Amino acid sequence: MRILFYATNGLGLGHVTRLLALSRAVARREPRHERLFLTRCEAGPFPEENDPFAIRIPGVSRARKSGLTPKSYLQMAHPLLWQTVSSFDPHIMVVDTFPEGPEGELAPLMRWPIRKVFIYRESRKEALPKDRIASLFSSYSLILAAHDEGTISLPPPLDRDARVHFVGPITAGVPKNANRESLRNRLGLGSSEMAAIVTLGGGGDPEAGRIAGEAAQELRRKGVTVFASTGPLVRTPPEGITAREWFPVWPLAPWLPAFDLAVGGGGYNTVAELREAGLPTLLIPFHRDVDDQHARAKDAVENGWARMATSSDEIRHGLEEILSETSRPLPTARGAASAGGADRAAELILSLHSSRVTTTSSRP
Image (cartoon, rainbow, N blue to C red; front, top):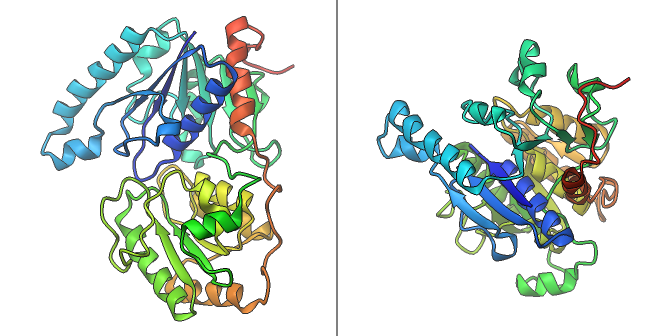
């Protein structure tokens, strides 16, 4: 069976991270299947262990920087995308966040005889026009909600759609058996040295660098060793981050057990991974057109495992509150968030091969 994963990203790495995790989960179960990763994200190369065969079509931001007009870019990029799909001729196509792609580039493919799987991540209500929801999802065989059931409200008519399955958070995964001492040794950390990870997304937002530097300055003042993870969309250390503090490692999740606390953005993957790692966390949400980071951070605060800051004063006070405790100031969240969302999603996707998944559009 041939499976195509289509990931497109703007300011972060959410789509890419989720679909790479899902691709790996498929490979663990059925390595004989062919996997093609088609993306327009500027991140790369992918880590070797995450690396299915990948084709990258440069994204719209790269085109803009290179002086291409939107018309020129769209007339070149969309046919390249369609030709790639046509040449690979997948049995299943997996799409994340945007049912027809952010530019409607997948709309023609919705009529092609390919089984389609959609990864649903909660978005702002205006991201999915109410009058188009039914038609946008009509071609999908499976709709996999990357959340625990009961934690989000699906828009109608998806709230009664039999194709919807809640699989839990889909992330790169925080190893449960990670050797903290070994990780800290590799990072050069002493046994009693307090270390913080600052991770504000994939690196496409210029504002994130400034805020990372601000958080790092506060942590330094308090004697905390800083590691700033910027993601592969950043090619140089952000202003305010020293070369020694720069930690351009991706995926970050396997390294999280080495740290004592975290300063994170409000993105889906960042929040899910920090919660799973059980780190005392200060979340700094950013405004996004589709992703409601503020609501996600607020939910984390209400669930008692994180604090939130939206200003310089709140960053300073939030870090003071976390560090004023003699032990971990917040209840550990490790295990509170469901792990294995990628594995459950992979099982459902592979079940399409034997037509065991219902594809009707409404529940009784």
